Image (tube, rainbow, N blue to C red; front, side, top):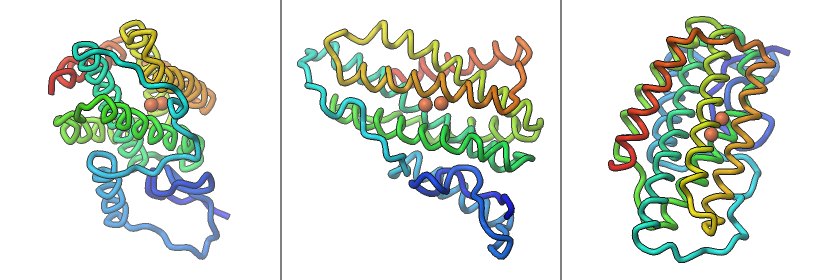
Length: 238
Ligand SMILES: [Fe+2]
Ligand SMILES: [Fe+2]
């Protein structure tokens, strides 16, 4: 058996997809062009199409809708737009890292985490449309930027790349705390999505840490916080 690179988020069942896939030596090796095309496919799927999700149900599925009133509805929809763009960035980071990762085994360990990011993407998108709003027009831009950052992190080596995942997930966890404090208690549908996302992000950080993620230097952590501020402030409006 061997481990070979495969398109991130390329399948929806638990046995293949995001990152790497185990298969016999007789199966094909992907060329650089194949990989670039698979990356392009995933980018289009993430920004404009339907990403492949896991078997999990939307955590809001059985919860009642609530009348928020116009002002609160718009506010919550904009917060969910930020969260949706955050998940677009997460997919792009994983994609970029997969393109340059050195140890296939390391990437495989993050397979499930990356698939769950697609769940988050789908749940946020569903909630935005329930609230009658639109996804961010800036998503292609943020996807491209995050992809480049992910590729750079992958080039720095797997230890740093995994450390980057750990730090990203921790920052997202804090960010979700902030959003949970701003979403009305009675909006159970939005809260259920955010709460499940937070549980998942904590777990993703633990997985990346256990796989050998290093602590990033403080200036890098600060730069990441500043970059996410740029994203959250612009996407709230656009
Ligand atoms: Fe996520
Ligand atoms: Fe995550």
